[in-house]
Length: 604
Image (tube, helix red, strand yellow):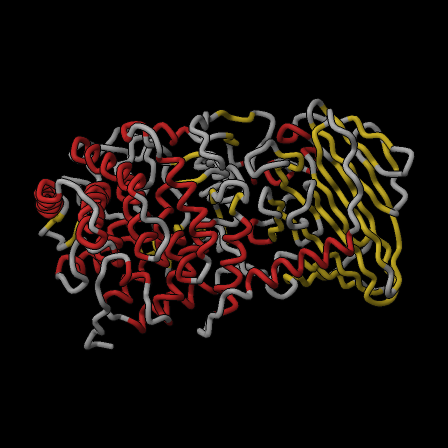
């Protein structure tokens, strides 16, 4: 039986990642990249779709943690006869992709079992498994080859390998699983203890750059490590999550492939990295963004592949039943073809914030930005699919218009702050035109709030960002009214919905969890308005949702009291970092983005 989403932990190497359950089973792994086909796909099906479990043969209790500030997972099984710890990790900077599992005897004697079921092609294809002369196990199917090396005697048939072994206190049993293209020679073996030491040193050195004196330093460091694990090292692209089709509503159809890079995440991700002192990662993300955005502005997409790939064709996998029967399982994401005007504002804002942070200032980059603004001038008044990628007809979304304003505003700031040449008077006229249009059509005076789309009375969590991006001052009554209206209508059992799926036609059946990043945005809005007690209270509430190893999914099901959606979600952890900085740092992201200051509320 598949585990609850929050019962998984993440391991990764900067190229791919695996999910390890509390039961010692690796139920998800795509090799050799985040977006490759999975060879362990039990997460979206059953054990027969591929998994690798190591666990005691008898009943046990589980405790687990990451080894200090690293991505090295330690799972301890306590049994009546003794205890063992499994150390799981993926070596950093290894010449070959690998998963290392070290089983350590801690006390007494414990009988253990391992079941290795490899299925290529998202659980569809059974490889031919055979034993090599050195005792290792080889699994091959078409272009893919996986090698399993261990001292345990494994029983092998054509589709799986099994073994039973026993550990006493002080015993160490290694397992090393490695991937290589099938047409190449077998990869050399990895010394697991050396790999462990090198991986631990890597993470210690990396997290050592961050000095966070605040109350939530542990949560922030864990979120930064998670974000680092979701960066595709060769290009700097950041995947939204390492999984596909984990449902936003258990048993529902809102199941999407998140193993790609979204432009809408650009600015908040960049600021989280820069404010944490990770300028190398921030620079790599900016460079990825520039490469992805290059070309005709009219062809700018909302999302790209890890290396900037444009074609992300969506298809459905019929042979996987889906997580807890949540169908369909989707590969690829058709949203790449959608029109979303807000991404132009995201790109322009990210490049502006990067330049302010001392990253990039070239004229060639400015030429691209000028072209983007010229295109925004042509399209800002047209309808689009909006930030949430609706699959119903396009609308005039208020947030999309605001971000069109941001695109022009940041271009003007580029001229004013950095001396770039441009038709700035023309741009100021355009900026004013967009601003007046949004205030006239996107604000509903009857409810005292900006609304989801022109002519609507529905609300949307993205409206919380209107003050943060500097469209209006934080003390403007329209901003205060919007925050309060969003609270009244979308705040459910302590968490914020993106919008009311029961009242809005987004092209899908209604029902989803509370979107966690939006709940963090509400805390940020509180900070900007000076409602610091409310911000602290909500932030603490959100921190309580993290699982036992500090990870967050995309959403939270308030009825089932479970995490839902793809996991772990980069945007949730980016939001956590930014909100923590808003609450504890002098340089607050919520002030930086819109060039404004927090004004303390008299009520606080």
